[in-house]
Image (cartoon, rainbow, N blue to C red; front, side, top):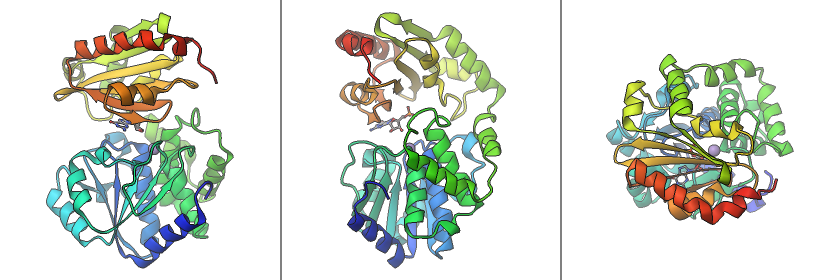
Length: 343
Ligand code: 5GP
Ligand code: MN
């Protein structure tokens, strides 16, 4: 595996080889990559005769329910007792697509107390030391690509079947916006080639992921663009916000706002796009940027979050109006950077 020390890889192989009861955990609000990597690895480990379960911290969007293996996942939020039993029997826990225990929210405390071997496989920047063995490569497109290379590193490419490939391809597609970003490394296409060799129907997978939305979601997107998008050309920035009432008016379901944050990036010259969504007692914020403008810096320094250079998230405990005022008041500090981005 590229950029992974030989010793680390050996240790990871040995953890898989010597343990039978394995639990895989993706991050809270898991996306296509977190779930694709989790179910893809689960299918592979089953072929190695492992007893393996995926525990997901909370519900995930309906547009990912079709993933093979999805119906077997344990949801911590609804099945805490079952999840705790599985964790107590686990010999190895694998963290996928996160590198900080805060990303599993309510599961954090239980996981911190568990004294079993832990393996982390992830592609986010600033990895924390949360596992005995850490496979981290921040320039890889997705955790699903890392899982593909990990399987190949065992010399077991021929174990990749249609189920495994479907899950892993979904992760790569969703984390690269269908190869529009984070996908300039040749290794991504080597992984892709290994997955396509199984004979999966890429176009059908694309159709499952992207052409599966409700009528309400489409109307909500129209409303967001028409009524809730603010353009700040001075800062090459645009944002969208949606209140609880907006969401209620369009029968919002988890996943309906997926990718809304990217919409303003299609406007000429926009390099920074932000999406604010009112959720319970806080505002959830998504940040996207182009080129070298650091979305993760804004998320980390001002909104208790983090992420990648061009895709980050965070939250704010103020009201929607106060959150937006706070955000807008930060922009003058970044005016130069926003007007001089470099590819
Ligand atoms: P999204 O906007 O899709 O929710 O998140 C985009 C990316 O930002 C995620 O892949 C993840 O890397 C990061 N991210 C989102 N929310 C948080 C957060 O609360 N904390 C940290 N550290 N990263 C986040
Ligand atoms: Mn990912």
